[in-house]
Image (tube, rainbow, N blue to C red):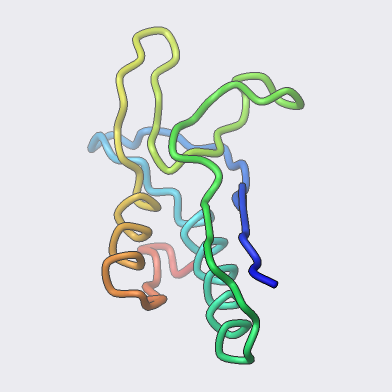
Length: 109
């Protein structure tokens, strides 16, 4: 039976740093661990057919409203402006290479 992993993600207190970047290394670590586990499951013979990160964009969540951010793209809620986060860059590379790269954050996380 095929398995699809949907809406896999986590909320963190993301912010734009003084250089205009969202360095969400907690989310990168979360995705690294979960996607690595998916690769392990596939290697063990599990019929995983899809994986979908939650979520592409920061959005309104029933439990948190706009206070917690789930997306790999930052959204300025008043203006709608969007900014790819570090997790976006990491996920793009993971998809393109079909590998899980482990990069350490500047803080060693």
